Image 1: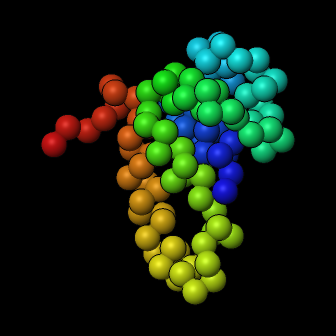
Image 2: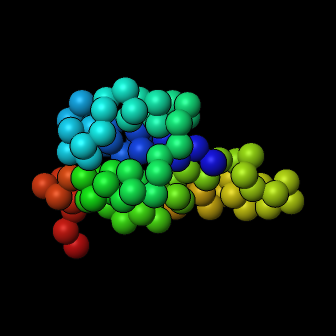
Length: 103
C-alpha cells in the first residue's frame, strides 16, 4: 500500500504543485515530498488536511493506495480485472469540478 503515490496521483490530476498543496495543508513542501515518495507516512491529522485541501473523501486515497502486492495471490486475477476500472472511476472523483461531465 502506497498512500503517498495515491496523494501524488490526485495532486497531479488536480494540477497542483507540491508547494501549493503543502501550503493549503500547512505542512512543508519537504514533508509532502517525503510522504509522496514513501519516506514518511502522514499522520491522521495530516491525511485529513490533505483530503480537505484536495476536496476528496479519505477512502479515495486508501483505495487508490492499494498495490498488487497487497492482494492475496489467489485474488490477483480478480484484482487485475477490477482494479483498473475502479481506479479510473475513483480518479474521476478527484477531477476538478469544471472538467466533470454531466449526465
